[in-house]
Length: 83
Image 1 (cartoon, rainbow, N blue to C red):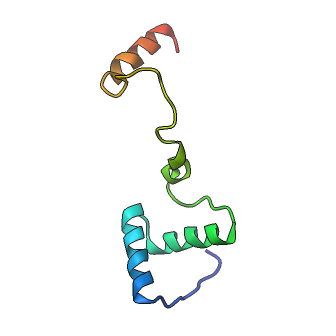
Image 2: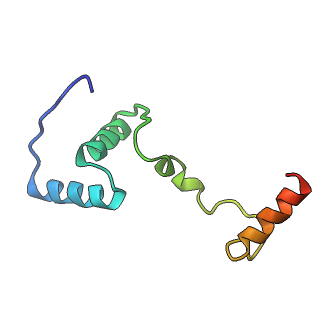
């Protein structure tokens, strides 16, 4: 990182930051960087890849109602077809 900044936080904000850090499984400094980037409108490549596609999770439909239970069967079938 190029710059370093020290910030004093009120107890309530500090608790919220700590909770968000645990929930997101990120360091507090990473959560602060993400929040600042979002507030300032600057793009960030940090964070987990899942965080970048969180809005897409569950938004696609495979048409297979038992895909989670029989995923191996469907994979083997696709491999035999050459896909």
